[in-house]
Image 1: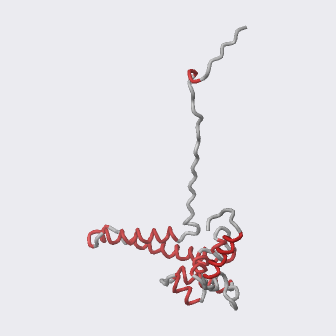
Image 2 (image 1 turned 135 degrees about the vertical axis):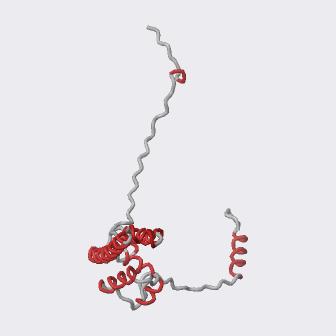
Image 3 (image 1 turned 180 degrees about the vertical axis):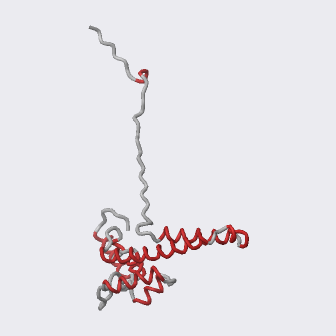
Length: 179
């Protein structure tokens, strides 16, 4: 029915039409946040989940199923936060724990990188394909870089300066003033 002023007869006729249409009402629970009976995840469990996420080959979905938490929680704990809404202000204790694990992984990668680099000797170059040894060194350097705490922070500053449009003197109206 269009929006306008109608007569009382048209109004009641429209109400009768609307009441003849049967509507099925279905109430659906929305599963957000903690479910009934679930308690907050303890700091020790958060640390355990973060460690497994950083050191194992399991996916976030597999870890979430194993510990009965959401995949978003796994991602947050892995980044030192207690939830996805607190990514910008991580939990101090959890963040320190995660950074220690990342540093340990980075140190291991660096030591293996040095081992790979030490293997590139004149004698080995003759016998082994340099590409293989260089590939190991490159891979270990990427792992070491990615495991540095706060290695994923990219700060890109951009300054935009607008200059005013320059106009010629001919574009202005000339007013002659007689003295």
